Image 1 (cartoon, rainbow, N blue to C red):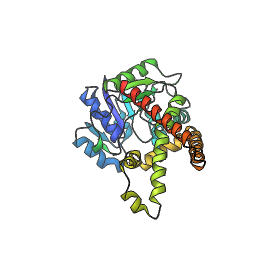
Image 2: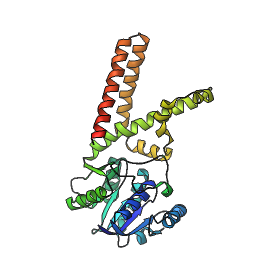
Image 3: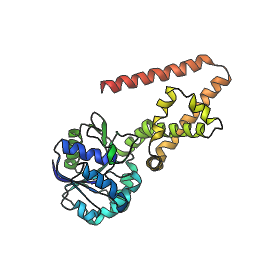
Image 4: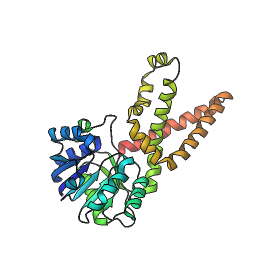
Length: 292
């Protein structure tokens, strides 16, 4: 599909893209780019056969590349655009894996003046609590959602090629507009991470924390699993998508206030109805997930 794929940021996501692309024969050569401080990780990626080679100079890394995948944290994408601007090739396709798309589009507009027509923003809804190339796997994207968010001037042929690329990696590809993506992900991913971080932060600061965690049941472990995620990455994601997240936090406060009032007034009937609706709504989600 591509002659030379350049992965900018060979971590969990970038490394898994490289592994799956190699497995599916989607690139004749796959190279990685990183900063000087990333060299040990890049050396490991090469030793593991995840990439064919790596460069610490971006111009050297993207030379001759017909596909450039930006797999860095969302907060650093603008700085990558700045480095890529003088190297930008009309004959290549550029894409990213950022969890927020409005911030990526805004960064592109600030750097280039307009979003380049061969930039195809994308977001694989897949990941793990671990990070780095050693956590990368061949099947991270298998049967996972992948959302492409083209803008008005994005070349249809570029969208089609990136869609085909991700489908070959095993992803279930959807196309939607940027704002819709950020709203959906704020509700289904970003807010749950905030809740998990907030709950563990609250309990962790209690004086009797050792006793609380000693008697925590499996439900606590399941609910707070995502609080093991990379704090730096999630700080950046939440800051980038705050306009979508803040209204949801306000709605959640209202829901918690409602439950508090039901408890204060001993309105167990309404409490039961609230819990029942939530249980049924989750079951509908699970049924839909299984069908997909």
